[in-house]
Length: 222
Ligand SMILES: Nc1ncnc2c1ncn2[C@@H]1O[C@H](COP(=O)(O)OP(=O)(O)O)[C@@H](O)[C@H]1O
Ligand SMILES: [Mg+2]
Image (cartoon, rainbow, N blue to C red; front, side, top):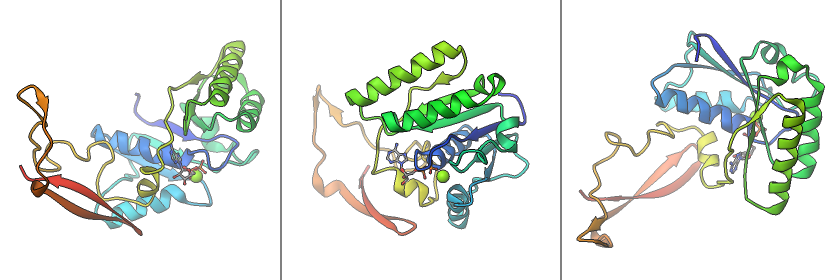
């Protein structure tokens, strides 16, 4: 990716995962050792709140002079076609592949000019592999083919357990969490050709607090 890249999350719908995906992409760049400038152009300030919480916990996520800028926008028509969208190198449009959502998403895509359409990447979010969703995805594929512009990414499944703590702010990276160096080495589970259950006395339950959400993780003695 060239220096000074501008990636804008937008679309005409609220609550489809723009902020969640903007945050996840920020975390991905950070996990690759790249700095990111995260701009929150949504009055709701979801991603700004997230980055401030992270930074309060000692995890630096926003570097103003970074070569990659990620912009999280509001999901409202008209104003969503803001200065960032016009200048964007990549326009990411998360959507939930329901028929009702698709009408809005397709309507928005057909309303922007061809030059902008070329930069659009649709990301199906909260995928559940239902017939309704499969039909919806097929519909959008048809539109993209007919227009000859725009692309569709593979998408994200519905993972309610992961996203609330993510948007709540955290002190480590979603993509590097649990890799070597971040936690003690865990011996392989598989021994002498069959799966062996770990003895329970080696397990430790560790409470974790992300913002207001508290949950537990299991660690094993090494
Ligand atoms: N893949 C997903 N699985 C489960 N929940 C999700 C997923 N993506 C988003 N959410 C949840 O949906 C809600 C809206 O997401 P958000 O990113 O704030 O949308 P937007 O910025 O488009 O308004 C949030 O509560 C978020 O945690
Ligand atoms: Mg948002």
